[in-house]
Length: 195
Image 1 (cartoon, one colour):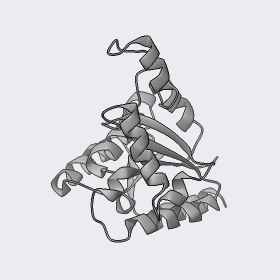
Image 2 (cartoon, rainbow, N blue to C red; image 1 turned 180 degrees about the horizontal axis):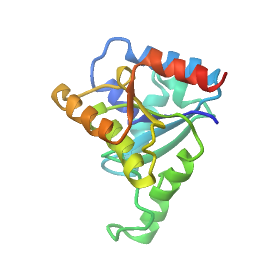
Image 3 (tube, rainbow, N blue to C red; image 1 turned 180 degrees about the vertical axis):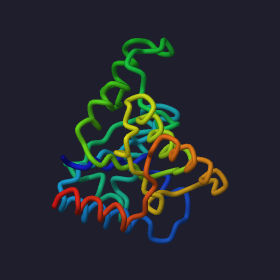
Image 4 (cartoon, rainbow, N blue to C red; image 1 turned 120 degrees about the vertical axis):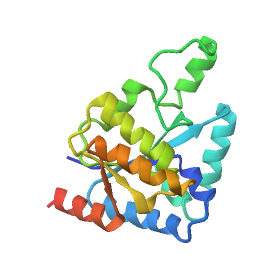
C-alpha cells in the first residue's frame, strides 16, 4: 500500500521565514519517492480562482519548490482557506457556471475521500501547521473515519504562524489518534512500510 503525502497550502512556506525548510521538503519528497509515495498538492483558494492560479504559478516557478509542483506525477487541486475540501454540492453561494468552472480545479469532500483511501500512511505537511495542516488532518479523521493511526502530521516539515496555537492543535490531533512525527521518523515508517 503506497503512502500519500499531502502538501497543504505550500505558499505558506514563502510567507513564514524558516531557514532551509523548502530544501528539507524537496529532500523528503525525493527520498519518499524511492518508497513509491504519491504526492498531492493542496493549493488554497481564498479570494478567487485567478488569484489562486497566480499563487500556484508563482510556486511552480520557485527556484526550490518549483521542482515539486512542476512534476507531472504530483496531483494538484484547490481547497478552501481552512484546508477543507469543497462541499460535494454547490452551497448556493455562486451560479452554476462559476461553480462548475471552479470544480474543474478543486477537490470536493467525496473526491478527497476517494483520493486518500487505500493509502498508508496518509501524511500531511505544509502550512500553517496549527491551522490548515491540522484542520485537514482532523477533518479526515472526523469525516472519513481515518482515526486508527493511519494519519501522520510532520511538524518539522510544516511552518507555523502562531507558535502558541501549535500545542493546542497537537492536543486536538492526538485526541483523534493522529500521529505527530518528525522528518526522520516518517522516513523510517516509509522504509518499514515498503520492506
